[in-house]
Amino acid sequence: MVFSLQIGSLIAPAYACGCGAMVVDRDSRVSVDRETSVVGWDGSTEQIVMRLTVRGNAPEAAWIMPVPHRATVELGDASLFSELQTLTAPVTATRHYFWPRAKDWPFGGSDHRSGDGAGAPAAAAPVEVVGRERLGPFDVARLAATDPAALEGWLKENGFELPDRLATALRPYVEQKWEYVAVRLAPQESGRPLSGDLDPLRLRFASDRLVYPMRLSRLAATPQSLGLYVLAAHRMEPRGTIGGRQPVVTYAGRVDTGQEEGAYGALDALTGGKPVFVTAIDQSFPQPELIDGDHELRAAAADTPYRTTYYRDKLLTVGGIPAWVLSLLGGAVVVVVAALLLVVRARGRRPVTPPPPVVVPPPLG
Image 1 (cartoon, rainbow, N blue to C red):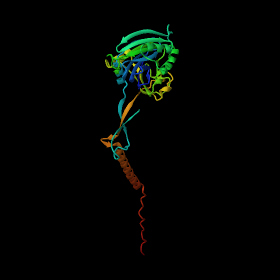
Image 2 (image 1 turned 135 degrees about the vertical axis):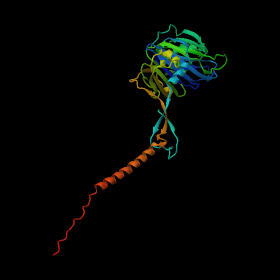
Image 3 (image 1 turned 120 degrees about the vertical axis):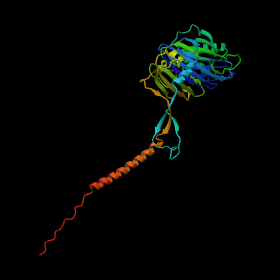
Image 4 (image 1 turned 90 degrees about the vertical axis):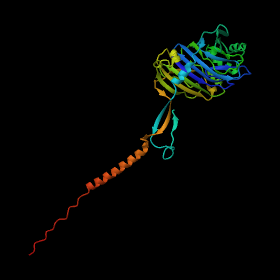
């Protein structure tokens, strides 16, 4: 089983939001402040638990996500996200340095911080509604569309207009015979704008590879960020950059959630209580228009552990005295002792002048 956590951001009027796209009417504005998704894969089935945090003046919006096979949809467990954040949070540690720095005595005095830091069967009609249900604030429709124009027609019938750029971006998914989950977002109270954290949705669909849909993010008008928390049998890595900067691992290590009973209930339910290797990956997309595909994840060459650590640098002391001072004093003592030893040795080696010979005068007469 493989899982990942994705966090992205969107500022209106861009349409992309991480692994999906948001559509509102012409007179409304909506922004997705945060999109958090947990993606799981066991080799044949993929699941995504997604939660949106939104704001704006739109009384409703449509969210579209392409999936490689027909999906089932249900409400997810909101506690899953806080569990993952706690599990992989960075740690702090103190590291000592020997020689004084600019703010240490005798120059000054303070510490500072530093951081290390695939194809589904074709639908019988251009758009086939294969399922529809009401889940909390969501009106969820599962669609099988054979071309973007047909999907656009369905959206118009339901009160939304598909932007031209989004229709173009959806074409590769249509060509691969992917399907869509189209979700109408609406507040619990009629007439109020969408705002705050929405209930999480859980999608499941067949997939013979771990793929995270990112292609629609190329429509974003602002830089995008991606954070993946991947749980698998081994350390995982993306196959490529897909138009962003090089992905950076912020955490990697084997975790057994079953050792802390009750602490990771939602995560434990997803993994079946089995130990997993957690890999946290961050990636930024300064130019979203360069995104040229979806993320595929694969096992890394080795299960090398790693954890992001924020260090508090501190001058090394012994008994409250800087070690470098003691070192200099010790060095001075060594020099003095060595000098004394040299003097003693020099005196011990100096040749002793023999006394002058005694001259006996000759006898008189």
